[in-house]
Image (tube, rainbow, N blue to C red; front, side):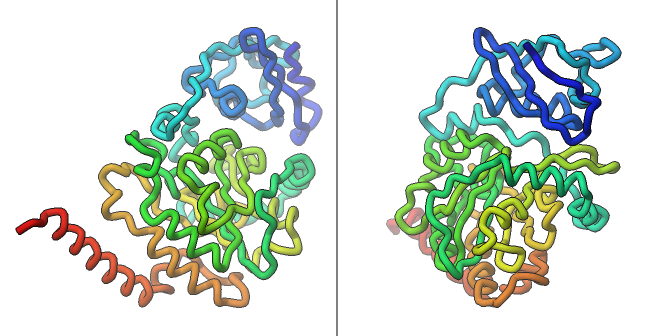
Length: 352
Ligand SMILES: [Mg+2]
């Protein structure tokens, strides 16, 4: 039976939602303030049926109307039977297949730099603190490589940060951001590396394997996190959205990581909303087939990471100024890369 429970009991209550999909019962955890779109995303993560291709039957609001994407769990009529229609995407073997079928990270909505200031109070809100406490309790971290004493922490997003989700390619490495392995290998000297993506662990693992990140000989991943460790927060202006609370992993590894030694790379500013100071907004990597030859974001960022790794604490650093901070190192790298490209160009055009 579909158990939406009594949605009116508490805005913090987590409920189990039972959805019938063919012969299968799919059970997901939902929160009262979560939207129907959020439910679809969780179903997508659980079943690999694309959000856009799925159809939910039996979802009604309390007034008896069919529920829309923006209705919340609390608005839904409790006790109804929910059915899902949709076909799971076939298993993939190659990353180009991933690029086509993987759950696309919802939308492009983001918060501007100026908007972040009005959101700082979110982290202090009791309901956000409470949700975070529950997340810390309920979501386990599977450690791949033990945190190393004295290392700082680099948390990296996947889609559009190190991987172009939206382009298709012949081989996985064509969608990897240029300098990816070089970047992680260099960072690994000073930082433990954690991958955090808003999709499900299945996709995180597939992507990291296909990109050769989880098996690379020159660096190791400490662990990987998915949407389960994320928090949904609400703001009058921006509505409901998900973000990545670094406090989650600070609570999991208090002896290793904290605000003083963590930096997070993500193309979406809203993911930093609970830890603005640790966030570095990376330029999104898109249209890999056009930008592959020119994108040097990771090359330049590795100079910045190496430079700030020497600091006692990262607190107080404004990462938005990273290019200015590492200006000289970046200039040097740019010269080298230009020279290499020129040489390459001569060889390719070569012969004469
Ligand atoms: Mg991203």
